[in-house]
Length: 181
Length: 229
Image 1 (tube, rainbow over the protein chains, first blue to last red):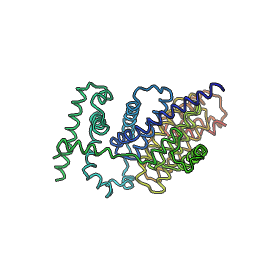
Image 2: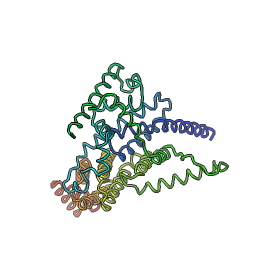
Image 3: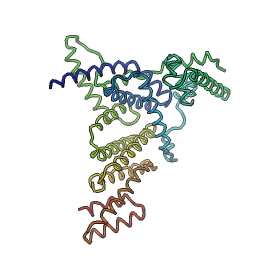
Image 4: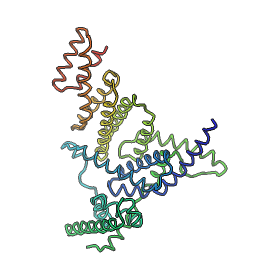
């Protein structure tokens, strides 16, 4: 019994600390996932799983140096798993196609046609490294040394990747603009 | 043509992407077991906090049990199920995974019946993932071949899947599960082949072999109660 209460107190502290981490990171992690999967339902699903896994790991090892980077790593792996599972589940049937409307609705069309919607769509099509470097540097405001650390690359390589990522994004946007004209 | 500066400012606009507040708070509650911080009377804060916790917990979990893939509360339902699965022993895993697959199938049926086409692909993915979990759990556990209750359930699962496939007029691929039927059928045939059987049961065994030769493995499994009496 005498050991029981300290354990409860320690757990309550972990919970409190992880609660802070959750509040600080939930928007960033959700945005990070949504920009990759382009579906709110999938993003919610993967994001909640990210934090659940994060909490399970945190309970066992609360000394994780950089919880935010740790959560990003879980989210990245979950997104990769999601795309792998999606590729495996090749569900193609002529009978089902009419049930799922392949044409975007008016609202979706409006979103896709808007400037921001286009940037979002093109970003989702970029390769993973390019997406990550753009999101972390321009959306999360992380300085290059931090981004380099998250990407496990040197600062110089990260700068080059960022430059190439922006170029790829710009070229694809320009291409789509020309097509529309 | 956009300039680099314009592009960066557009990228920064993407910061406005945020999850819904209610969802953020629900997920936090279901992971950490905390409640959103609103109180009517400061004097009763501790009591109210307890009461709200209990109400929110039961309310959210009760509501989330009816959620289907694509619903607001579906992620909460999945977290609840995953948390429960931590307490399942290795031996009980096949049974638990079958129950979970049965649930996914029920969700899929519900979606098909209510014609919610948009939710269908996600629900099918969920079912396929749970079917592959069933296959995994069956491959891990030794002696599953003689567990007639589990085999009865797996047959039932496939029958329900077939009914759904007729409703949708399409086939839902579950390759790993199909391999499990094959392995189980082969295991049963070789197991009963080594035993001394009555004439009637010998007859059933030869029927099983015939069906296995025609690759009708599920029908082999259906014959298990006749030989296992």
